[in-house]
Picture (tube, rainbow, N blue to C red):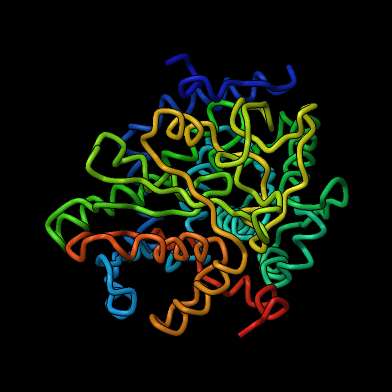
Length: 388
């Protein structure tokens, strides 16, 4: 495998201005990723600040309701800030401090990465600037207020579709301009090398815990792990420790949008190979190579690309990628809330909706859904789309 590549995907497609910063980041990460003191500091923050390990919960009522395999939830929604995003921001903020960079740039769609970045910057005394699409600011009002309450600055992005793709564009422009003083905390397993690897590794804490918890709680590895995929950080984190365990089926669930005629955000299912935000991967593009305007009820899945390692796993058929439409996700949102008393994020609801597609699986099977985030942030969006 070429450096920075997963099969044919990955690499560095960047302005020359960023080369030094990325080389510096890769060198530091290579030096400290197995360093005992760094990992002790990281573990302490995960334990005492984030609240890890997150539980592996048997969804008994849902299992009975679906009358299929045993359903388990890996409860990343119980992390501090309410999602898996904090796993990566903690690690990258520590790297930024070691690099001597006190100004942090981030982009956010659903707002959870923005909240997580603002949170750790507040804790570590770092300046934080968060770029967010104007459309996402409107539908994620609560997270916007949280980010500002934590002392970070939000920069609205009105260009393009005014969603995650455009926020990322503006964040990269800022980074190019202020590269000597700023570190860019990318929120997913996207972007130029070494970001897909770094973000995956920090999120892999969930998969490592799951492996140990499943062996303790049901004396076997899961038969299937399901996770939603936008850029793909929660899925890559929970999948990665199981890639060599070929008995474990890995299912990534993408956003289909309103219906089969919609563009949605299913970059693997509906996309083709191209370059987006510094990496070669699967993207949603026209025949002439223009990025398509995506659409999803979930702000966090409303992105026209996917992490390069996911594209590779799809190519080698180690993971299967499917799509779920808005109405199916909304139905799962309400169903899980009412059956299990857990209100999921709309991103997670896409993964949960897939459970109905596998209800014919043997009842002895153990299926784990990565509960990537909780639904507080999405209540305004759901109310606007209420049909129940």
